[in-house]
Structures are given as structure tokens and as C-alpha cells.
Length: 68
Image (cartoon, rainbow, N blue to C red):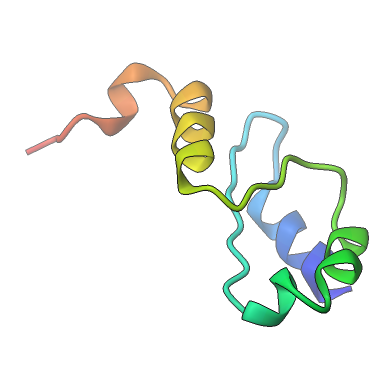
């Protein structure tokens, strides 16, 4: 239940983009299926490269520019 609540806090509007990282090693092993079943339908990956592609595809070009 708490996982679903955290997801809801990260995405308030349809235009919001959010990335969640579960760093507990148990979530990738013994409890992986339970964790995935508790989450809403969404892309899941173990690869940092996929995360970078996702963020770049969902943010405008100027999002990553330094304001300095």
C-alpha cells in the first residue's frame, strides 16, 4: 500500500513525470514479483541507460541546460 501511495505523490497531474528507484536488494530477488504486483502498470527496468532515455524522452530540450 505504501508503494502505491509514494507513486501517487510523485505523479499529481497527467503531465508530471516521475522516476522511482527501489534500492532495497530484496526487491530485486526474493520479493520482486510481490513488489511488481503492488505497483501500477508502468515501465520497469534494471538498466540505468533505460532511465536516461526515459527522462530525455519526457522532458523538453531546455530542461537539462544550466541556468548559471
